[in-house]
Amino acid sequence: MPTRTARTAWNGGLQDGSGQVELSSSKAGTYDVSFPKRAADEAGGSTSPEELIAAAHSACFAMQLSNEVAEAGGTPQSLEVSADVSLGPDPAGGFRLTGIALRVRGEVDGLDDAGFEKAAQAAKSGCPVSKALTGVEITLDAALES
Image 1 (cartoon, one colour):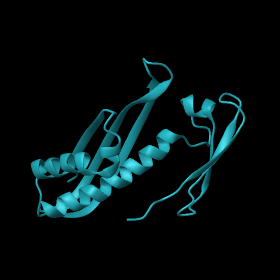
Image 2: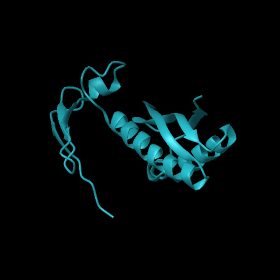
Image 3: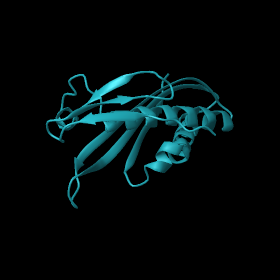
């Protein structure tokens, strides 16, 4: 299996510095990062480790769920997945990820609500990104759309 690479160039201190994250393997883009924008409610055009984790988790979960649905005898037509990754204070000092909320709405042939929920729960625990983030509480809101 392949290894993927991202690179960050950082200049300055935590509060006054900034950097750029480059998605090196895909060459899909380079994105600004800064701690003040990371800790602010509004991102102001910069990304953050939490947003990048959210992107990775939503993509991984969608792929895993499409497989779980097929293994349960369904056919996924569309899956809309979002991941909200929260940053907060760590009681031990510094910061930590305080939670991840996955939300999926799906159009699936061949599964009822219970079957879709079961497939979604299996995807939540089976997705490699979920496995990597076991130290963070992950919640799931899954529903079929009519």
